[in-house]
Image 1 (cartoon, rainbow, N blue to C red):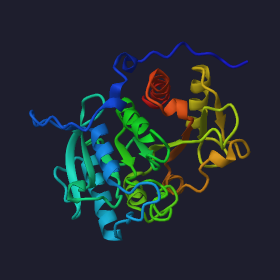
Image 2: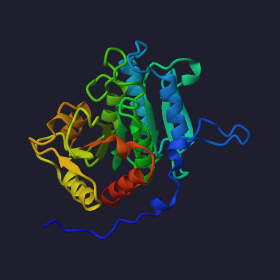
Image 3: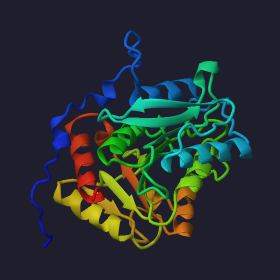
Image 4: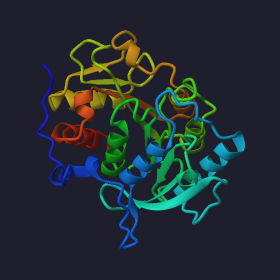
Length: 298
């Protein structure tokens, strides 16, 4: 018989779930910082959409400069240099805390899809926890879930791809493109001891079954954290499936390039697939976030 846990209660459940409703208004009259969610929306709105030919991965030098600037912020360096065509912003996360954001300068016109990288200055390197969203807009609302997890888990960094995964003839699928800016930044910051939580969404019509959450270490044997998350999610009433070499193979992320890097440096990689109803803003998503925080936050 499975053990049961006391009900998970988080102060975060008391705050409004209106993060997904934040608009792109930028406090014009007050000159205050922009919300992280609004910045993500701005970048994605300007970036290459489904099937767009506008996607262009930056050159190797630019990608490494982006990674270097993210790493510099993690170590507490003030005003690190950023590559031409990028901008370094101060924004507020969903809990009102200041974070730095490195992204393409979308004010110059249509973006090419470099991505967005939010960092807590001085969090340390290698970072303790990184949240990643490789398929925004394609995996509907995962960018919203990622921003909420970044705040609720007090993660050190948030990586969000800058284009729909089908852009550039699928070259924008950064979970499978090691030369992308996203993958380069991941390699720059993820190191020994880092926990990487990569958020995906799946289409239940293409993956029949009862699971609302699919968890994987992107290896045939699930890691300790994946097993702990599975226990906590099931105890909270979510239907789960854990990849164990057989179950849920199609959603296990076995060819994920960020997972491969994590394994190579001694980091922990968690591939999290969510059904649509869990990604949609509301109390169910908030409950999911609270469960993840209960396990992942010390």
